[in-house]
Length: 442
Image 1 (cartoon, rainbow, N blue to C red):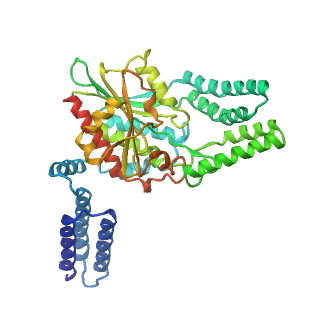
Image 2: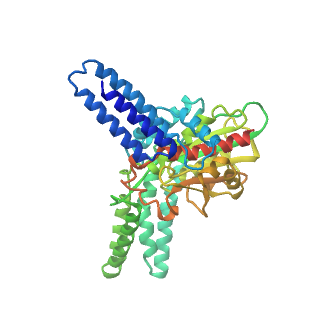
Image 3: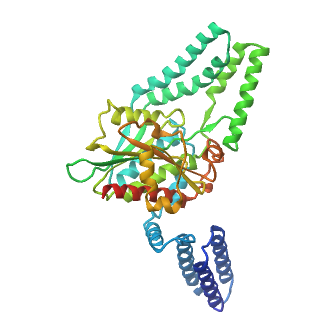
């Protein structure tokens, strides 16, 4: 029993130190290890008897409370209002978020693969649980697009070769032929192009409409075990080697090598934690918090086939929001107040970037959450928001420690694992968007 005062005193000292200076993650981990060691020493005390199990339960309560409180502590200079808001956010976090995120990343989600189809079912069920009317966009006829692109580019390349006797275009187009045909086949087999939910605003009048988007497919590039930078190096070496074969041996052999390689170009080995389970769970977090926002049409959308060429978002805009679109089911859209906010790679990196419509970017940057977290503009970001043209105002969120173009080294590889993702980073971008949506609704 003499261990209890010592343990409680240790906890109080650590909490007192935390109030003076924000605790880092490593310090929280250290506290966890100290408490575990104390618990082990109690378990090994032969005189403790059955009282030890009760002590361990009490220690578990103190442990969870202490670590939870540390996650809500502010950074230096943060005001009382922001502290209260962040604490309120964490108090309502889904208790299953960690488990669901790990489960979502347990396998690759290459479009058409088993993990991809399971992810689509999970997302539809998740939207229904939150009270949204869930839909799945399947368009077997859309398979014609990637098939025409693959075959068409190859035909143009052959024509170019016959005219100029230059073969690089033929080699590149033959490399992409197999991925396009595989995408077309999986679409033809009924793989969803998108999964989306609808929660219309109350009343009959037109209200602001916000589409919250993220792609849920993932991809790993051929031969890549470590990083996207390694993928780029492999690609350069491969193309140089193929060109050498074409020059020294035979252009036809080089084309055959490129075509066969293309069949294995896109793999299913990446868990896709940051790219883009992080974006998926940012959308789910926003959808959960906005389901009671009665003055805004909220439409969470999860796109497929982003990695193969943004086919999912193109199909969605073509069907529902383009010039010939049918309109989003159950939503009365005001063209002057329609926004699309995309999330792509928001689970790693201390800096938050947004790219897209400048008017929408200014509105988001004016939120207190964006100012507090130091959101920055970047010139461009290739993701699903690009197909949302006027009257939609669209942009995308991303995170990186430095410029995103040189600091997403883990995407499209086996290195994109959930253990490297910080869930609080996902919550932060969701918090910014939730504040923005509530502001336009009011």
